[in-house]
Image 1 (cartoon, protein in one colour):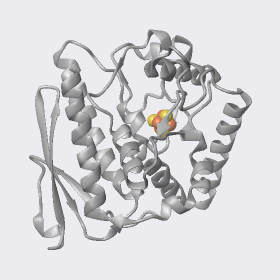
Image 2 (image 1 turned 90 degrees about the horizontal axis):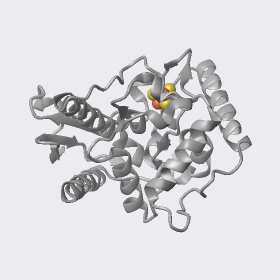
Image 3 (image 1 turned 90 degrees about the vertical axis):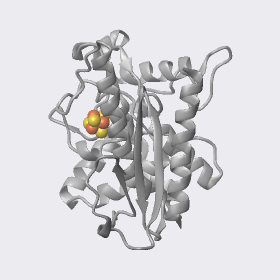
Length: 278
Ligand code: SF4
């Protein structure tokens, strides 16, 4: 079950009531270059033990702020991003979720009313079955065919998935039923082309705009660091079954300040790598 947040992200300029945090709260500084600006803030972390799922709310807030700055930057450079709440044109694409998000989404599904929970889980089963019925993707997951660049392999899988044309399990009447809690990949997916180009049949014409670095990747790397595993991600429709198999991992705890320090160090590292590559 989802419980009290163990951490809060406060961005520079936010109203901060310092007395809302207990004395033993750790403070982690955030200082990120996002395009031509610096994103500054602090993460206030309680000293309770925390699991990977506990990092996700802060990761979502950070991802929203980076997406907001990405849209501003695109507008400043003459591009319009039509992505907004209510548009579901990309909700039949592959949504990769990191292990911390799988654990979090599972807890959030457990917190909804039983009758709604049944509907959601049944939508997951139907979507997963459609994907399994489509057979193996053209490139084995997690491996790159000889001579193929990693990005080519990702594009190949994305095209294969879009061809299956399977609704996201959280899509109902062309609207996202969990919009504030949607996966970070959904927050990071933006285009500067028209909405029609996002439909699976026209996806080759879509012009994606990627944020400077990915918070989904940061969460994946955090899980890898904490558990000494290689980077992994799960197709959203398989999240509940993957969560059942990895039940013990979902229950693991670390000291919250150490876990959040590792997450923010990973985000800073990805940001620095992006600046070097730019
Ligand atoms: S989680 Fe919501 S926004 Fe993301 S693909 Fe599913 S319906 Fe669309």
